[in-house]
Amino acid sequence: MTDHGSHQHAGRRGGAASAFESEMNGGMVRMMQEMHAPGYTGQPDTDFLAMMIPHHAGAVEMARLVLIHGRDPMVRQLAEDIIASQTVEMAAMRGRMAVLRGGPDPQPGGYPALGAVRGG
Image (cartoon, rainbow, N blue to C red; front, top):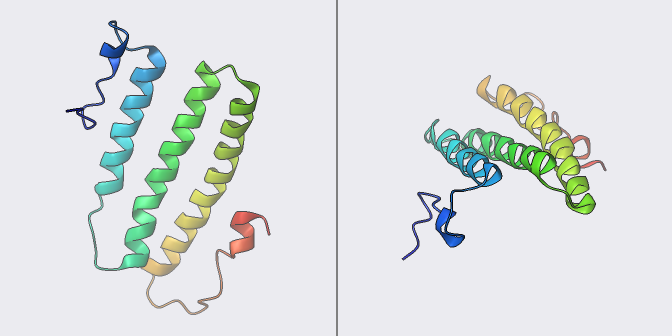
């Protein structure tokens, strides 16, 4: 049985994990801890945002690591795109979270507009 929770993958080559593997596994553990840290409030919208922000931050970290360690130009371009888009989405989610935590939304069609996040 594979233990996915411990992220032990070094044995498949018979040696120690590479820097990339160690950093990626550490990032995944942090992301999962940060996603679950807030707990549930009973408010699906804010609970979703509270979990998605660290999820996106984890994707940004993974993309950053492939820029450091990876070599394929297409993967590197994808990583750059992920960093750019997910950073904008995190800002939008934080903004929306602030609106929702402030009480009833006086402009439910307001910030963030979907086009501001997805480019159209």
